[in-house]
Image 1 (cartoon, one colour):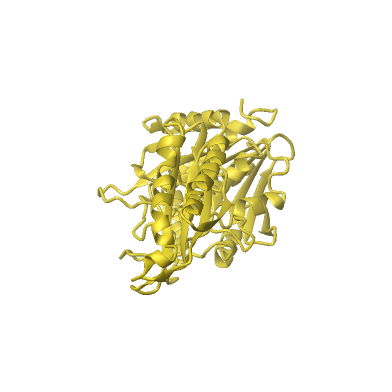
Image 2: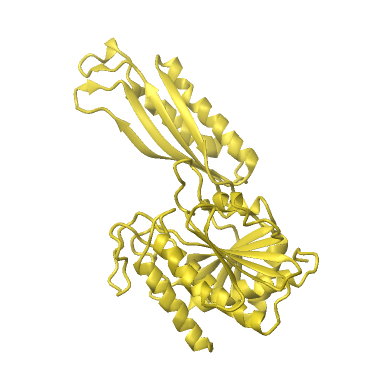
Length: 396
């Protein structure tokens, strides 16, 4: 397949996926689409319904040597798309607003490139292509797709894993790579401040949880700038407040929800301790509280040696690329679970459209410059080949 035809196929696949998005653990048509394309290739072993989910695994192997896993996520978000292109979402209220359609199309492209290597006898080792469900939203047990895939055994025998992510703050021809912690621990807290409530005209006869909320918020928002080192990435944000039902009734309780983000395990633990401390002021004011913290995705810890192979692949095949060495921010990514098991790395690939309009991840106008698709496929392939070249199964 020549370069022009290759790019056309990637765009065709990506637009099909974009028009037919499916939410986490519901990627039935997506996995069927992926499976059909993979089964058309020579030399690939295709497994579906991985771990009883919609996961798909394609494997090329020469029968010996090390094993590299390449991963793409497939799920979409509960967002209504606001765009006028002819491949807009046909599933109301669901949208590929995080580039997973592009990730999936790119990995399908890698599969086609690997088929050529396999048929030509140029593959030494094993490459697993994991099309993962549910990166965005956990199941009823609070577990996302990556842990489910790990439980199903997809990392057995794997020496190294690599993934990419669309990067709308960088244009085509740019990439972002970072060693070590690069995306955040993602934790959620739910809290209730309780008082007696009462008549709005007689506040002195009861205890007012809304009044108690004030010092709690002050303490909570002071944790990061005053209790966490300025050198440690961290943030606490309150995203939801709920109290009361009418103007003249002091409610009996206030409910809060928010998120805590951090990089290091130590800072993650510190945030939880300080959050608990912030709520204890309620008891001094005559009230009580309940605080629950749900620990979500761990921080993405990129392996520096795997990153070296990524940079080598980019530099050799795209020498004019600009590579930014910086963390990706305090967003979360469940590929972090993979990075806790095997040496792994994710890089961000520039995809911004050249019209100057900012189309951020998880927004209703998100879109990409599709010229990034073949670039992503070639970088992933060449990174995998470089990792396989080490007979010990690890990137040197």
